[in-house]
Length: 153
Image 1: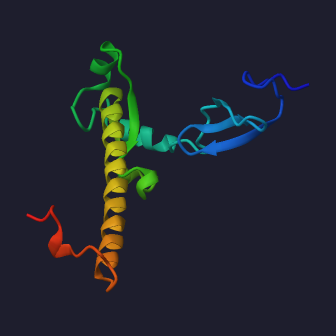
Image 2 (image 1 turned 60 degrees about the vertical axis):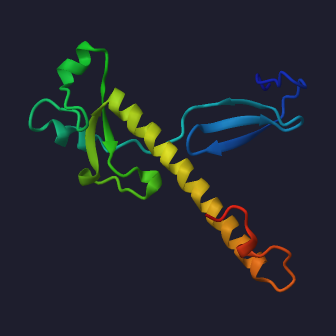
Image 3 (image 1 turned 30 degrees about the vertical axis):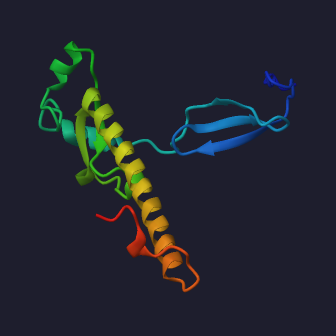
């Protein structure tokens, strides 16, 4: 007996979906309504030896703001081992690519990375559109010529 029931149509038939960001989730096979993510996305955790190596010289300090582990604990923060170049952007899981960050700096770094990723995608899309426009405007049957553009400076 399946204990998961779609709140929209009452179906008990679901499809499993996978996301690198959110993990696994279930979608109703009948109406397509998304129900929930499991939150278990990574098959491997960061190498625990990296944390030990960063701690080898004593207390860890945040690579961005310089706060120590004990100071961070007093503020309610924790430390994370961060990848300088994230694995999703081609970074490795080697010790040299890791560093300790307090949770506040880690959240800020991740937000900046994702904003940069979105900007990169937008610029790629603009470049594609520009190339398509230039190809169109160079055709002999084109009604639009670049020298007639009202947007030229």
